[in-house]
Structures are given as structure tokens and as C-alpha cells.
Length: 218
Image (cartoon, rainbow, N blue to C red; front, side, top):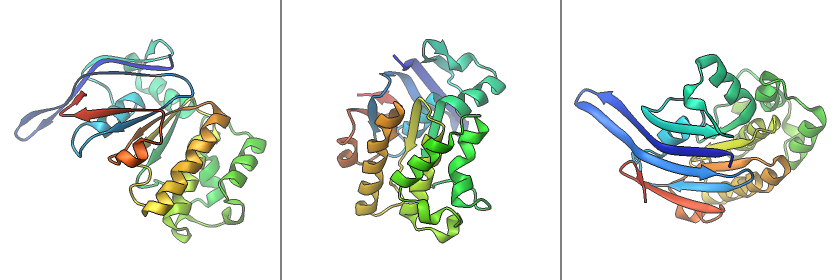
């Protein structure tokens, strides 16, 4: 088992008191597996993704990666975990405006000391980005930007890919094409995928599906 969340809870203080976002959530993910997490806005999907990716810490419960509880890591160890083990794909693309496509693609792989020129060339070709390497994010369409974001996430061959509504800013046809491309690349890296989506149609493309409502899995 690659990832194992055990009885994870998370709350946030608000002006009206404590907001309980996750209530004892447990799920597991094996290497190479794909899992869609569905639910309405505010159900806790993105919070769960951020906890599993080491971007936030739970109030209680365990988040085990290869048997080690990442919730117990210090900030430096968590940063190293994210750089080497995790690839992130967001709805907003989150490309670096001052870097061209080539530098954006290589950014996380270089940060984690995992840059491989041969794999990068192959990945760039698979993503159809060879002729766009000297362009900047503002010169790209939404679909092109998300392909760069997927390439950046996969460039360091991470073990886990977390995708938060990765097609949310794209039209249906472009979103379908981008998701199909990402799914076709995963077997080449061996990465597992946990994807948050509100679309049951897209969720059905993944190996498993879980639904989150009111902070609990159903």
C-alpha cells in the first residue's frame, strides 16, 4: 500500500466558531492505482487532498506513505516529501509567469534533484509541447497551460500525483483530452493518482471512485 489515510479529521476556526471539514476519513491507494474523489463544493475534497499531499496537517489521524506517518514530519521533511514523492496539478495551472515552458516543465524535477533530460524530451513530445518550449504561460491557451502543468508534475517521476479539479478551467472537449493524456502517461511513471472532481463523468474514467459528503466518505 502506497498511501493510507486512517481516521483523519480536520477543522478550521472561523468567526462563527470551529468548522469541522473532515470527520474521521479513511482511504487507501496502491502504487499505480487511480482514485477519483467526488463531492459537492465545501464537502472537504480539497482539504483531504492537501493533507494527503503534505500541504497541511490533520488535527488527528494518520497519513501513512509507505508505512511512515507524514503527519509527524517537520516542515523541512514535509517539503522534501513534496519535492520528491509528489506531483501536484491544480485547476488554476499555477505556472510561473517569468519562466518559459521549458523551465516550467523542469522546475519541480530540478528542485527535487530528479531531472532526467531523456525523460523530459520524451514527456515533452508526448504532451505535444516541442514547439512551445520558448513561450511563456501568458502566450498559451488554457489546454496548453494544463499540459505544461501535467508535465511539470510528472517530470520528476513522483510516486503520487494529486490533481485538484484539473479540468475545471477548461471546456469539456479540452478537459477530456487533457485527462486522457494524463491517464496515458501515468503507467510510464508508475505513479498513483488521486483526483478531486465534481464531475461524475470524469470520475468514471478512473479505477475507483469515492464520494465525500459533510466531511465523511460514503
